[in-house]
Amino acid sequence: MPVQSKSTRSKKPSSIAQSVASSDTDQSANLVTVDNVTYETDALPEEIKALLRDLLRFNHEAEELQYRLRQIQAAQQTYYETIKVQIAEKGVKPYQD
Image 1 (cartoon, rainbow, N blue to C red):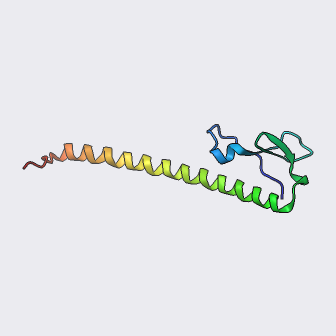
Image 2: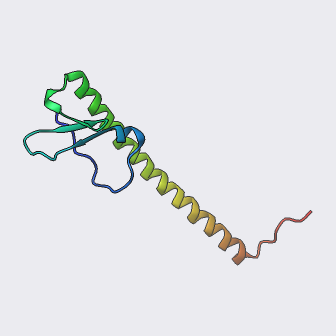
Image 3: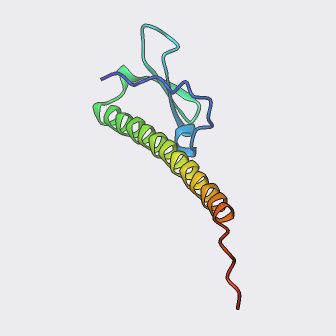
């Protein structure tokens, strides 16, 4: 299974993704860069190919979780702002000792 090309998103990659990156700069070969050294994926042993596939899958899952977290944080902020507006509109008095 060929290694996927890196994401087209402009966000900064994680520290692990910085150490291992894949690209399709050459149409005839899939390449992977590990610590600034580029290798043809076809020349790698199957065990390393499997590890690369797993790493790419984990990177994708992490991006999805980060996206979901941003959605949840936006919803939290919206609810908080709505609560403040509702308190003011309903005339709820603050707690006093």
